[in-house]
Length: 242
Image 1 (spheres, one colour):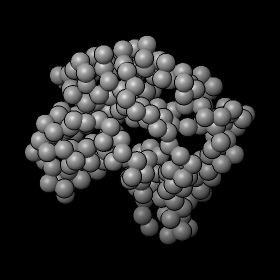
Image 2 (tube, one colour):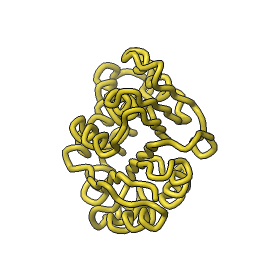
Image 3 (cartoon, one colour):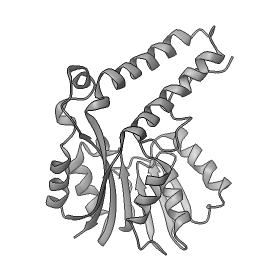
Image 4 (cartoon, helix red, strand yellow):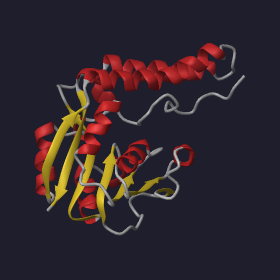
């Protein structure tokens, strides 16, 4: 028997609803990147950061996250892809990490660390050079949430898309690009999150923790399909610091 899974990230490329094609589209909006310094706050295992640096000769990257398992996975990927001289990851609190202002900063799904979207935008503004680019990935309401969705996410947790853009403009940015996660990206993300546990359950039906693992994945799937699937979105904004 193998140990029960403690997260659903094993089968994910990114810890957000993001396809391969869209990841490279987003990287393209951040240019020029040759020789740029790129810092990802809340990088997870830093797959988008690694792709960004690979995409641009001379670019260097720094990723900061407090998740030890994710940082270990990212460092292994850095070594496997021969990027050790251009990318480093630090396990730390993103809100207190001190770094020189960068050419590009990334914050995807990490707004909770700064207490919300406004705090994140204000923090990223101070961590960018004038004219630098921010790639912000943030949750939005993309439809009217039902009661089940609101049990999981309070209504005030997310803005509407136009409200998010207005807030970015009000906190010192200009909008260069906007896109949102589509239904296929969301379904792939949620399915793979669940599948890491489902595959473990198939291989370990008699494990003493099997019932608890099944409860976790069933609850997550119900929240997704019966709750926020039709109302929660995720927007990717490429912003320039004024």
